Length: 23
Image 1 (cartoon, rainbow, N blue to C red):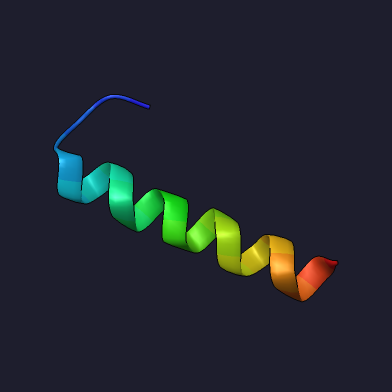
Image 2: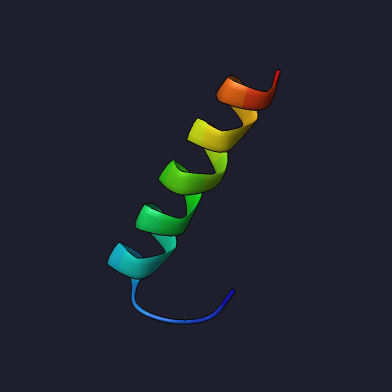
């Protein structure tokens, strides 16, 4: 994923949240 550090942070937050919910 390429883009602003903030965008990457938001993407990581979304992926992490989905991982916790699906776990």
